Image (cartoon, rainbow, N blue to C red; front, top):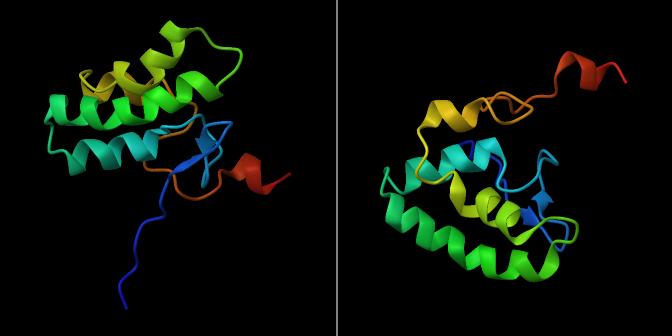
Length: 102
């Protein structure tokens, strides 16, 4: 039987990841999308722009510029840049030792 990776999709209207709870798109989903789009930045930006329209209407407490950066600003940045911007390592699917000790 094949194991499929968890779908790190958005929970709406809060726009947090359904799997890890990080602001969506989380680091894991960004990596998945980069691989899926095979580094085609324009295709990735178009795809994320579809989510951006809804996010602008649903996310409270963030400016338009912050939401735009969150959804499409990372698309053209090198992997190393956005890997260091998140709170969890990109390949972290399992809870950290801090999360399991609570």
